[in-house]
Image (cartoon, rainbow, N blue to C red; front, side, top):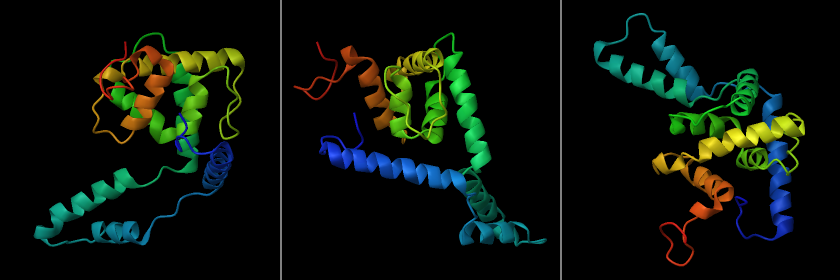
Length: 184
């Protein structure tokens, strides 16, 4: 399912072009630290900060360390590693949330759906994969999606993961009539 749902096809295609262009542009430049990140770094570098601000400084450092964007090189490396991990997966993952977090942090919604369907062409933002490797990556994604029933709905990527599962496992799709539960 497309992120724009039932929007007209030209609108969806324009959206996809814009997303592809935005991803390409983002990959071309290294993210610069924001003023807030610079200020936290300056505070953390103080030689003798007041004792009462120690916890606040540590909390700010944690937030900015976890919330900052990866460098382009790190992101591209993570994408390559993920594609290899998915293609070489031999067993069902034990820890689905960590796998999904890596996948949804590294690829766009559109890229994930294209990777999951070996008969589809890959968007230009992904490296070219031969048909055999694409099929292996799709099988790895099927194995991750096969464990989604264990996933908590509190994750930011839950909706995307749920729609991926419904696309790969239509027999598990939510009942359209009742809105909940498994379909018959």
